[in-house]
Length: 517
Image 1: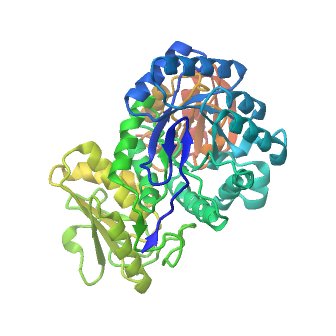
Image 2: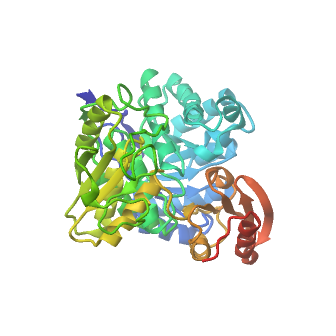
Image 3: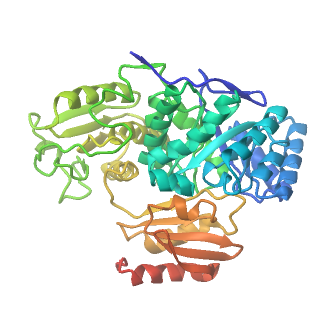
């Protein structure tokens, strides 16, 4: 048996995080931090919903002062949940925020734009040490620094090195109150980056706690499934000390989803395999297993669905057509993901030819729990590219419902594209439009464009980068203003918000990607 990763336990204003403890759950305000009453009310709603940390946008000195007032009011009312200041671009502001809140989040991709690591980080560590403030080193896939991109490209290695440069200095100076995150809107990229970061820390004698999250997961079932697909595989491999589910919905709605994920996928103290070594696949780089073709599956094709009511009869499979001697049937269900992963490893180590059919059986009646369990279990077995078909049965749900969930899981895992994908941020105090409303309008107009990815981002901080995988982007550019992108290239800048949707549809048509319904 292999002992799983165990981070060092740290304290954030009395909140113990890491080590043997259950992952803490958190969320972020989407209010204007300077609207103290609205921000305070939202903090209270999140705390009531289970938030153990609350983050707020902190763009300037005025927001720092507002954050201090919010913290004082919360503490006066007996609520001692740590507050986190979200800092981008302005190292001097981090110094001020560290004096008034319990934790700050900095992004290595933009923190060093006005100085070097050796100049800026030691000063911040000194202030944090003096005030007992914790730090999150928060790497975003879409906002790596130019020097990292030049040396490593847009890779998981670049994400990890971006964090390690900061962590090495923290480790050298014996600053322990550090949490680190590797975030991406692509669950597979996030999983690979966290795995590689964890291994890299272990090799260099570090054990900092890990914050997990799939950025811009979207809303509705898709957002919940995408989050579970990304986080469950890591939790089941022993990684993750705090999580945030990023939904384009009210932030207090995120907390029950996060709690469900933590409870459904408890971190094991040990595993019957090493998640980083001696595997029949590379856990840090995706490569599709190419089994022999058997009927409509195998040969590295998109993952098929097995069902009496096939979503796509042209490619999907009927249960009665599966010959037991021509496929390997891997059975799983709630609470069985680690056991099934061991079986998958053993089989793939000795057989690279037979297609693998993953069958999930459940009797869970609660639709929300069934959805999370299905997504996390299948996600943990799909993410490394070994599965050729999936099959799910639950007597409490009809085949159409189950098949729709399977299609969403497959899309989240990057195993099959069947619908428009929306990379949508949860919004924060930097967002100057109603992103939930705009996302619904964009969905209503484009959901029939099944092969496209469309980014809907609240602001410029992570917008163009985090939607790097998107074909088109709708990004907030300021109060009442929106910029439109084709991939990462800006096409229409600073459009009036009321004109932006029509211009987006016009752009899609100009590029030849439009289809009539």
